[in-house]
Structure formats: structure tokens, C-alpha cells
Image (cartoon, rainbow, N blue to C red):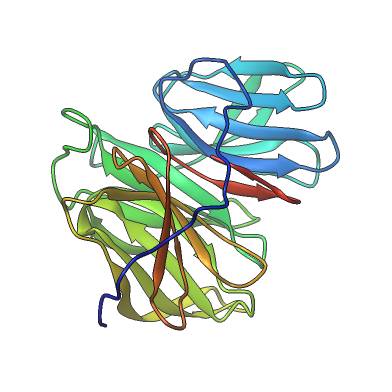
Length: 262
């Protein structure tokens, strides 16, 4: 892998769409049926649902730091909070635990997560932060929750499990362990959910920023929000050319039609 020169985006406008203050906002996803953006406030211990049409924000408080959320066919949600997966029912604001992970590491918690093209929920863990972006190293793992509520651990020795997504043809899995300052790629089998052949796709310099959340666009390009770096970068997996745009702080990103939410 050769790190290529940066290009700069000049035509992108960045604006605040929601004035609500969050402690650590992450894991945004669009809920088409309700017309809402669902996301979490990790250390605020809340799952949030924002309606852009009415600018109305709803929240459900949970018992532990919540790293990510996913939609279910039944209309409820799967949440990765503390060291467990749970089912969140919005109507009665209840969370039912369905699986535990990292039970030998009481200081661990879930962080970012996302559903793969086959409907499996991937989410990774990390040790609790001593201060922002400072953790006990190699304590995290990447887990996969299946429909029968069983859990598979794909790999461990992770520092801060973060952004993840899949290529448009579903044959490549992209992944970020933040303190590696890199985006890694794996071969992916969408039928079996097996991952293999890990390699570094793109590496950032440490003085630039810490890679955090990630999503893929309709052109197959990766968008990466950088913690404490004041920027979002767009990477072409075919050429490893990076393009950047600046903002004050970034945590996580997702697409909604022509709108890009950070």
C-alpha cells in the first residue's frame, strides 16, 4: 500500500441540522418507515430518534453506555450496550438482554456496529477510555449477532473497534481499529459471513486525525469521520486516493438520499 497525496473538497457545505447537545453521538442510521434518523449517545446512555421534518427528538435512556443500534423487522431495535446485546422496544422503553460478550473483561463496552448485507449485526468492543482516545490496548473484539441470538467472535486484540462497512458487491469488508490509524480490508463471504485476508487499505498519519465512523456511498467510495481532526475523508478503495473536507469535530456518518449526516 502506498499513501497517496490528499485532494481537497471545496463544494461540500457542512451545517448543523440538530441543536441538541450530545456527549458522544454515534451510529446514525435512517429508519425509512418512520422517516427518522436513529442514533446513540454513547456515554449519555441514550438511544435517540430524530425527525428532520418536525425537528423533534425522542430519546430512551438505557442502563449502560450504548455503542450502536440496528433496526429489526418487527419494528423494535437491537442495541449493543455495555457488554451485551439487547432488544429495545421503543413503546415501553424496555431493553431485554439476549447475549453477553467479554464477560471476563468487566471494563469493556461495545462501540460501533452495523448490519451486514445478510442481516447480521456486527459490533465491536473496547476498554473504557481513561481519557479521550486513550484505552488499555488490545482488549477489544469484533462480534457478530445472528438471528437466533447466538454470537460469533471474528477476531480480538482490538484497541478501539470503530467504523465498518461492506463493498457494493458484498465481497469486501472494511474495518477501522481507530488507534491503528488505518482502514483495513478483508475478503468477505456474504453467505457464510466469513472474513479473511486482512490487509491495510489506507493509512493516516498520526498527526492528521483518528479514524472513527465510516460508510460507503453509491460510487463505492468510503467516507470516514475523523475524531479530533476536524475533517471527513473520502477514500477510493481502488486507488487509495483520499479527499478531505473540514469541520470542527466528527464522530460518525451515514447517508440519507442526498443528505449526509455526521
